[in-house]
Image (cartoon, rainbow, N blue to C red):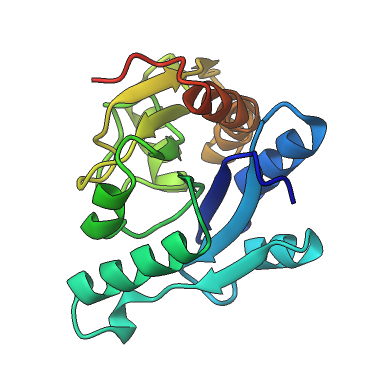
Length: 202
């Protein structure tokens, strides 16, 4: 453990491939941070196995276990602060982050979305739903977006995007695979720049 490095909590709901890309980037020294905590909305998320394999602390957070969303948010903030978390990276996290968490980590919570926001964002726009919508639209390009997180799904300030061509014979699966490849390259790079203060944030 390097006490001088910022500590990142990665929030997941599924397989955690973006989590793995951040872990790998940190190991290679391309991300000057420690992946210190993995938070999952599901107990069966495969990303939790990735965390265990890497000896990263993890926890399952379910807001319905609390009397209110406000109580859930306050509890999560305490858990994050106890673990000295500096940044939060949402990586396939399917829940709206409690407002208390967003407010406790201003401009230090980011998300990666598999489309070129502001298109194809918002509630219900996740996973294959996004790629199906892109193909149905006839758009000629797609790609991931990394943005700051606020109280609205996929709404915060865009930090960076990567363009991916949409091919004539694409299916949601083939498009998703190409976008995901760019996600794995983009996310560590953007997090590194955010940590270094290279973005002029509004």
